[in-house]
Length: 69
Image 1: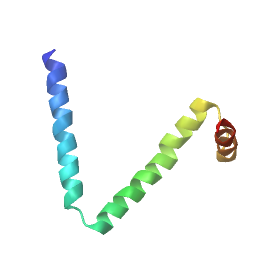
Image 2: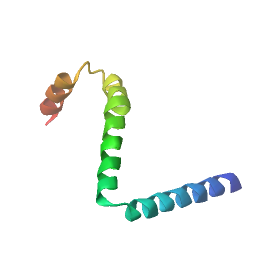
Image 3: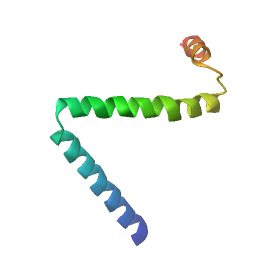
């Protein structure tokens, strides 16, 4: 039980540090971070989600999303 408490405290501390550093950034740095995160998401996470849903490309994803609504 102590290991999970320590891990939770470490994650909480890292999260607080990230928020602190983000708040200290200039607007240009914040924009650069957001663009970098979007690029990483588009290159690595989006294909994983598409493959998990069985979608071949973005147009098929849009078509399926519209049919759900």
